[in-house]
Image (cartoon, rainbow, N blue to C red):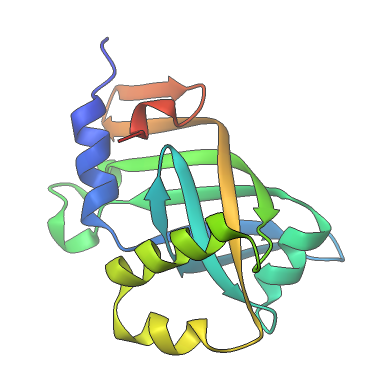
Length: 153
C-alpha cells in the first residue's frame, strides 16, 4: 500500500490540537492535550510550567502524540483517522532567535489568546521530534511511519 501522504496532511491541517501522553513522576500515565504548530516535520507545543505534562516532559522527554479525526466528522466511530507518533521532546531556549520566529508563526496560527500566553513567564516552547509512528486511515488501512519527514513543507 502506498502511504496516503495527502490524507495525513489533511488530517493534521484539520486539527488545532493534539493529544499528549506523558509519564508522571510515580510512573502513572497522563493524557492531556495542547494546541500545536507543525513546521518542517516537527511539532511544537507551548506549555505552562503549571501543567503536569510540562514537568513530565522535562523529566522524561519521551512523549506519545495523537492527532485524531473529530467524532462529528467521522463516518464510523470505530475507524476514525488518526496519526500517532512516539516523539522526543526538547524545551527550546526562550532567548534563541529560532524560538522567537517559531513562536511568531505559531501565534499567527493560534490567534489572540496565544499573544496573551506568550507574555506570561511560565510558558515554554517544546519541540516534539517524531521518531516512529502510525497512520490509521480506516479498517484494514494502517501504515507504519519511521518519522515525520513527509510532513515537511
